[in-house]
Length: 100
Image (tube, rainbow, N blue to C red):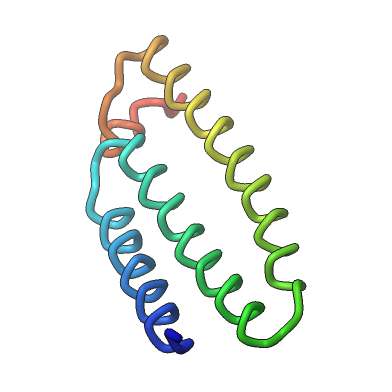
């Protein structure tokens, strides 16, 4: 049986990759994907801890986290598409042009 360590290590690696991508990307859709990767890395850790702890509290929290992540992705994608359609801005660095 696989212990808790590999699951926590996998979650930490995925979280680090997502954080690096979110901080270095210029494309807003890639940033949203990296944030989703970070949320899923946290979900892996929640499921692993709840599985090894013997309760389902972490798995219930993951369901709520997935709902929030879906709402965040839909709202973020709608905002990105709205900015692209109105201003033809494709990079995060050009968002400062939205000031009055």
